[in-house]
Length: 134
Image 1 (tube, one colour):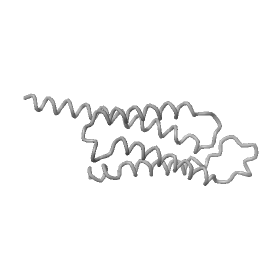
Image 2 (tube, helix red, strand yellow):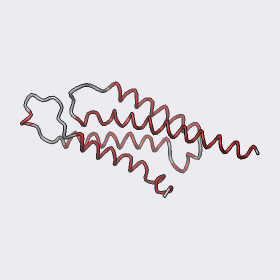
Image 3 (tube, one colour):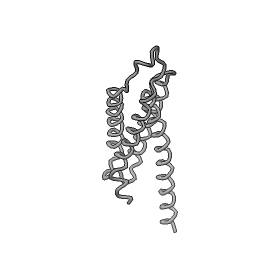
Image 4 (cartoon, helix red, strand yellow):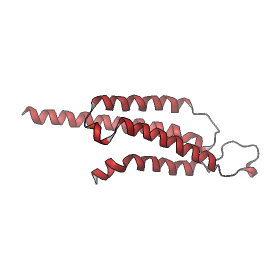
């Protein structure tokens, strides 16, 4: 189970946000004439592509085979997550279509996941150090 999570975890992460994008696209935001609204498939595909690029960059930083408790890669992933968070939060405006908010939500969730990952990595390193100290 853990190897499947390591192998396909980022794909599932992208897929979850792709589904969220599809859901959020049904909210048109502020419109002058709501009767002319059509589902924005082209915008959804653009957001899916953007999310794929963002997840691919995260994959390049945290590649499974080369990661192996690399503190430099972990710091790089945290810096990337912080940059995403700053860009995502600075792009929030009111009354935009729903799909517009997905990259900001992605950046917030990624920052939270990376914080949990850092805490887990530090915790396992401390436990490992104390086990070998005895």
